[in-house]
Each structure stands twice: as structure tokens, then as C-alpha cells.
Image (cartoon, rainbow, N blue to C red; front, side, top):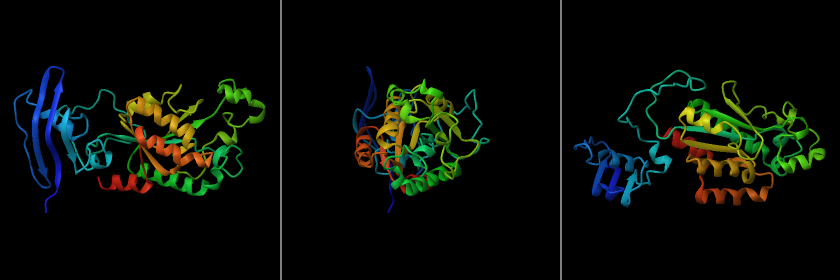
Length: 299
């Protein structure tokens, strides 16, 4: 039996005083070749944008493989050739390697790896709280995600927290506890380094931050927009602190966010699940590592 790939059911869409679509219904079945024809202004592009999750109908329903088109797992199965197909004026060629024909995937993604640092996760570190109890499984999940990203030519961006000597650029709470910190997370120190054996490569990106959010006071947003990234896959620590701060900022900046559950962890273990639930209700989609990898493979 054929499967409905894309459906519009009685959709309506207006742009100010212009009615783009009124009561449009259409179904595209698996294996069908469908041409949508009409003059300029007939609503063809609007209909396609509804099916791709780029716009939402004012009324009616859009479905892609039976799901909301905003669901990235549904869109991973779709290849799109946009109306304008010129290369951008500036072509970024760094960790992505030379241009390759890989299909047009909407949206493009990056893996954000937050605070996977020795002072937090190494057995000799002193700032991990409950994290050493789960460090082996967490780091294994991080390595799985990093290896997957490299294999898929997905940019990997490592976020680390480190301060100048004397903590002059640290948050007030850290400056007030400078004596207790005793040099921990000072830039160049052992504990500020990213953990060993988690798959970091020389051509990965590394950003040093001074506050919980990876966006605050850094060039992360500029880097992501230069790479053409629209969706972030976020992993790392601490779930309720740096991860959640970053995810909230990402959502405010209009990035779509996916969190790989097993590759995150909290310094206070009992805050891990509540934080994931909070983020999952509004700011991100919380999935398993297997779902991230499987979703890519199915594309």
C-alpha cells in the first residue's frame, strides 16, 4: 500500500491583506511525480514552504510522512532544490572539506559539545559533583555523537569555560570564591582542557566562554550563521546550567535545537531529568543518541 509522503488538508494562509492559499488540499503519495503549476502569486512557493515546515498554515493541516513538518526527523527524508540555487558569495571550506553532492538537507546542523572538560569529568577533577558517577557512560555517548558527526560532515563545535589568572573575567560568584577555586579552570591549566579520548579533531571548532551560555560574549552565533547552521544538536554538561542556558539562548536566536539525552549530565544529579523536561516542553526536542544517529541514517 502506498504511503502519503506529503499532505496539505484545507490549508489557508494570508500575508497581511494578501490571501496566498484558500482551502488547498493535496496529497503526494510515495513514488508519485507531481507538478504544481500556476502563475506567479498563485501560492506554489507558500504551499511548498508549508510542507517543509518553513511556514505554518493559518488554518488547516500540513503533514510530512504523517508528522508535523517542523519535526526534523520527518524532514531528514526530504531533498529540496530551492528556486535560487547560486552558491553564497562567501564559501566556507574548513572542517566541511571540499564541496560535495550530498543533497540539500533542511535545515543544516552542527554538533555543540559543552564543557566536556577534565576538571568536571576526569576522576582527578574537583568540580564534577555527581558527574563522576555517570562519567564513563556519558563520555562514551559523547564519543559516539562526535564520531557520528565527523562521519556525516557535521561541524563539531567544542565549548569550554576558562578564565584569566585571578578570575578577573569570571562571573561575580566565581570571583567571590577565587580562593576556593585555587586556579581551577584558569586558561592553560590541566582542568580547563577538553577531556581525552572523546574524538576531538584539529579541524573542529573550539570556543572559550566566560559564562554559562555558549552564546554570551562569544562569536558562536556568527560562526553558526557563517556555516549556514539552522539546527543545533546539543550535548555536554551541566544539564541544568550551561546546557540549559545555551539551549534557551539558541531558541531565542531562532535555532532549532535537539538534545541527545545520554550525552548530557548534571553536576547535581537530581536536576538532570527536570532540566530535560523543562527544555523539552518549549526550547528543544529531547531524543536519544540512537534517534539522532538513526534519523540521519534514514535520510
